[in-house]
Amino acid sequence: MTGIEEPSSTPTSRVITHVIFDLDGLLLNTEIFYTQILMEYAARFGKEFTWELKQQQMGRKEHESAQLAIDYLGLPITAEEYCRHVREELTRLLPTSQFLPGAVKLVSHLHRHGIPLAIATGSDSFTFKKKTMNHGDFLLMFTHWVLSGDDPMVRSGKPAPDIFLVCNDRFKDPPKPENVLVFEDALNGVTAGVAAGMPVVAVPDERANWEDFRHAAVILKSLLDFKPEDFGLPPYDHHSHH
Image 1 (cartoon, helix red, strand yellow):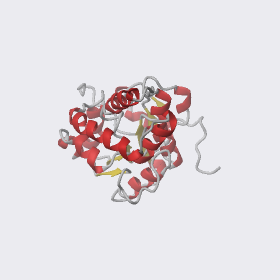
Image 2: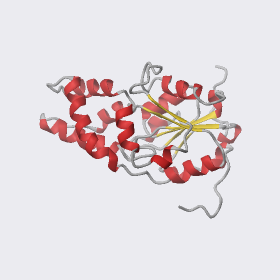
Image 3: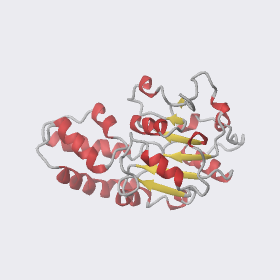
């Protein structure tokens, strides 16, 4: 069991040089749109979209997520029909997505201090474009993003570690996984980050059971609660309150 840190070690014993962020439900509030669309869609068939199902879907590839819901709820439709419906609705809603509390503050702080940043998301190019179309300046702070939805190098979506390993390889000088801090809101994402050998900061949905997230290095209520110095990153200046 080499390379696995004992729980007793403090976060500060790690040297973090690079940071990878999930997108949905962590930086942008897009998860609420998926929930809204799927609750209405399930109700159409007399079914109820539950938190248990949502938690299983989060971070997965589109088609996999669709099949999961169809099997779980017993919906009389194909994965193609499901995806088409969800896409139509998302096209309308995603461009209105807002930042979650602390997202802009944290990303701009790390970017200002020269920490290489990337995004690793289950999105594909289509939904990613829609989500970020009004946030172009924000995207410029990241060196790259990996979209497991249509990136041929990412064989399996989260909870598999593929996306984080691929994302890591695309940094200019790829660091060791233990020097990369991952930010995630979903259990599938935390599992994927841990499997990639990276310390993970979890910011779970309020409905999530924190006990499930015990493999994360730290669990926070909001990105606003993150203390960069706990991971050897430059602390916030006292006057940066936005």
